Amino acid sequence: MIIPPRCFTCGNCIADKWIPFIEAINEDKNIDKDVYNQNDLDIKFIDPDQKKVEESIEGKILSEMGIHKYCCRIPFISNVHLISTI
Ligand SMILES: [Zn+2]
Image (cartoon, rainbow, N blue to C red; front, side):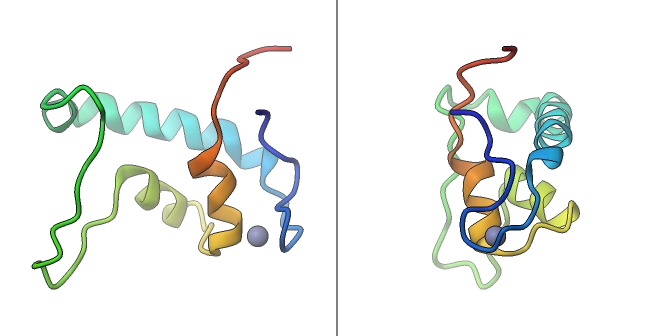
């Protein structure tokens, strides 16, 4: 799937944020190798006993980029990056 140019729900322009999002994730995951080398699935679990839930790297980056609405975050989180160039 190619990232949609605009959010399907609210119409906010999101396509221009895709490449900075991917670059920021790759940069953060390379720095944070110790956490991600522990399992191959790249999954972090939420401990419900904690009072404050820690955001994932993707969530932190989306918040830093100013994408706070759930409708706009969905394409970034759920997009399967199959094609690098057209
Ligand atoms: Zn939206």
